[in-house]
Image (tube, rainbow, N blue to C red; front, side, top):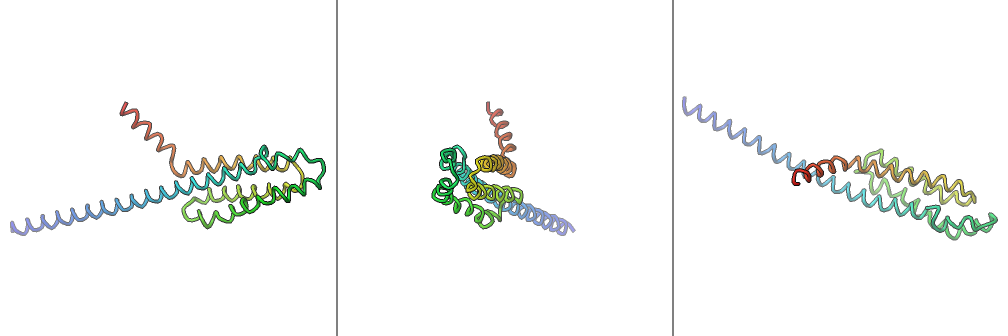
Length: 177
């Protein structure tokens, strides 16, 4: 009878240890996967922000070629300038729209993908609608792009939990001081 109790306790202990080892292993693998996913998202967000800021800079109404619009007095000269200087921007801004689902669709939340699509659509519209020789039209679209740029940035920060990480870091730094 004592041997049966000892055997029962031994087997129970081994099963319990096996359970905890399995749980620790599974938990560690899951944590590694989450860390890997976070790192990939961070890299993608950095790439996207770089593309967004470069695109917005190219379309800035205060930068060339858009700043030259006030130099033109008639629409025919502007259309010639538009064909030569502004239309070449179209592959960059339209290509951005085409690359979003292919390059970023798997890992990014739908809300961010929607904002990226809106950003790309308005960027494309600036290039196309600039041919109408209407500064107000271009300026209004550019303001929308600027707003979307910061909305996307805030959504990315929220998705990555940057504010929570900053709070955690601040509390750890205060503990050390």
